[in-house]
Length: 80
Image (spheres, rainbow, N blue to C red):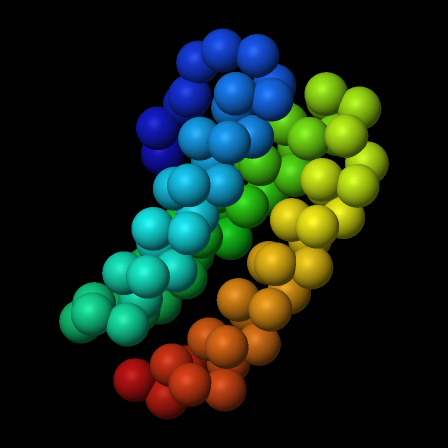
């Protein structure tokens, strides 16, 4: 997993972008489970960066987004 540089806020932004790319890639992948695993890791890193930056609202927003992605995967892609 890439390790973004910069401040926690910059890392948050970079990890969130990686998570969203993994989410998009799930739909075109022969192995959506691998993309799903990546997106969970990236969101966890983004949430951690938000917490380190003291951005509670951002951490909560990212947790809600992760929960949504998990629901989508379970409903639409986990049967592959």
